[in-house]
Structures are given as structure tokens and as C-alpha cells.
Length: 510
Image (cartoon, rainbow, N blue to C red; front, side):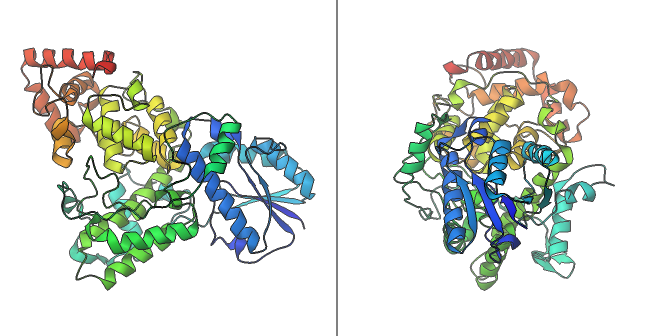
């Protein structure tokens, strides 16, 4: 039976059972689509990375004997929409069966279900064989629990998969070493240069220009610096283990003006495109750790494992548990516009300037820059979470909705009212100064609350707490902050609120 199999741009799993043998009756379908370039405005490096990875994958699999129909963005015969592309390929191949892998985005899942319902041939969908968990495992795990606390899920995953366990007890006697992993980086230990790449992607950049695809951000077409093949990903993974893992945990929350990547792995794109699996990444890191236990502290490794085995799987599970309603949640009723400087980095606030400029240059910022700088400011200025979602989904090379929206609308903006996090992640300038060198060369003083030189984050912080009193009155995690707010002198609070409103109304002045 002639079979057409669809592969999406984030389903580049070399190890999938589909590819373990060549079947002459199977044709694989891949397509670069305007449907995908246009549903939100993307960073140019993100689009280039996905299209490059897709082209390399198709060539590698073709060399192994697998048959492909591949539509490039600028092909004259490219219908640009998924349903039309599938119809065209079915007609071309005269396939009697259509198969696809379960998408990780709700909109594509709905679209493919609809397409299959209209076909008059056999259809089938299979798992991507990538994640540790099935699509609804998180939903089932929390079915009899009142709260969706990630830590309980993480412990279950450690036990279930035998990761860093001594029988039923965690290695090192603790499940979580997060308290050890909050160090500020002050220039030592030395940070090795990232495992970089100098790939020429001028052809794809040219295709995007020819098609007049609207993107933003910066790129050096002849020096593209991201892993976009499985071999690249394995190289970055090995480099991380040998050069960065030793200090990763301690400094995973640190931020610095001259070090964009610090000790982070830069594996998120190759994982989210499925070129590498979470299991092989964790297995490699643990093997290296056990071979170098005299050199690497357990807190470095546990912090890394928790992000992948815990947080990544948990966020995907929450996505499938809560969608599609999750995408509309706005529990704090925030409605303000995202400031223009999120697209230009043109601001005097040094933390935002650096984090945004880095994002525009590299299509990358690590989790604390996203959560406690750009996300923190957006929440404190009460920006509409839809605008925040669109920006995060567009700007980061690893942003696919299943991982982006739960981290943004949930963790960062608290728009879900506490499904993902038990409290909003907001802070004044004190935290930013504690974890970075941003405040050192800023136009504003992190210690001042009022006056022209006062850091805007300080007034915004107290104003936010005051504006959202009704939302937090029954939140035990917010009790200490609200008590401090209640002790504020009324005159000072009014001055802080006046300053905050000026920042919200005129972000271009700051």
C-alpha cells in the first residue's frame, strides 16, 4: 500500500521507528510554508534555523534511501497551506494511506484532524517518540491532586525513569539543589567560548527576502551560529559536558553584560526540533558526571536534569491538559501595550537593553532573562498577555507554542491565575542587582525608589502589588509581600504609584 507520511518542521527525529528501515512504498512529505512563517512575526534566525534543519534532515534521510517530496518556500508549485500541500502530494503519489506524527501544537493538531476527516483514504497518526511522557500523562498524574505542583511530578519522573536514584531515595539525599544554584557571576570561573558554528545560510535568507516574509531581529547569513543538524547537536552536547557542566548549576540564574550564554548548553533548539531526545541528553550528561564525580558537584547536574526531565515535560503536559482555553487566560486582567523598545532595545534601563538586544542579535536569552527581566517588566507594567505571548513566540529560536505559552502566560505573566506557578514572579531592582551586573552601568540607581535616577522597577513593583491587591489577598505565597505593602507610608506609596504610572504611560522616556 502506497503511504504518504507527513513530517512537520519540529519532528526531525532521526531515531524514530519510521526511519529504521527503508520502505519503497512510503513517501515522506515536508514543506516550508507561509502558513508557518506568517501566523506570528518570527525572528529571522528562528525561521532560518527551522528551514535549514529541515533541508539537512531531508538530505540525510534521502541519502539513506528514504523517498521525499519537499516543498521549498519559493517553489512555484508550493501551495503554502498544509491542507493544500497534503492534497497535492496525495494526488502526486497516488497514496492509499496518509500518516502523520502527533503535532505538539494545538492548532496543528486541530488542523490535521480536520484534514484527515475529509480524506477518503485510510489515515493514521503515531507518537513522535521524543518525550519521556505521553501527551496526557501529566493530566492523569494530577487528576486526583488539588494543585499542579511541578516538584511532585518531577519526583515521580525521577523514580519512574530511575534518574539519579539510589533505590527509592534521591542521589545526594535531596531532590532539589536549587538553593545552591543562585550564584552571581563576577568574572570567575572563566567561561569557555560557546561551541559556535559558521554556517552559510545565505540561500535561505535569500528565499525569505524573495518571498517577502516579514521577520525581525538580526542575522549574519554567512556565519550562522546555531546547531541545525543532529551531528551539530551531539557536538554541542559533548562540548557542554566537557566545558560547561562543571559550573552550570551554580550560575544558571546569573546574568552578565559581556557573557550572553554563560554556562548554558544552547541545546534547546536541537531538542525542540527533535534532532536530539531529552533521554539521550540526560543520559550523556549523567554518564559524564559519574565519570567525573571528583570534579563535578551533584548540584550542577541536578539543576540541568530538573529543567529537562521536570520542567520541560511538565510544561508540555500542562499545555495539553489546559488547551485551548489556556491561550485566552488573563486572570490579572492586564490590557496595556507592549512597549516599542521590545523590538528595538532602545531603552535606558540597562537590564532590558541588554536582554532585548541579545535576543535581537542571537534569538536567545536564558530562562532568568526571560522570566525576571523582560517578563518581569511586562507583568509589572500590566501588559496584555497576548502581546507578551506573541513576542516570546516570535523572538526565540526555541519557541514553539507548547513550551512558550505555558512559560509566558503561566510562569512569567501569571495570566493563568496560578495553574503553573503559585505566585507571580515579580521583583524590584534588588533581585536584578543581586543576580547580574546590569545595574552597575545603568542610568538608574537600583537603590533609589523615587526621583529621576530611581530604577523604574522599584516604583513599578509596589504599584503592581497595590493595583492587584484583590487578586492576591488569599494567596499565602504573597502574604509577606502584601504585609510589607500594607506597612508602606501612604504618601510614599502615592508617589511610587505616580512614578509607576509615568513609566507605564511613557515607556519611551525611560
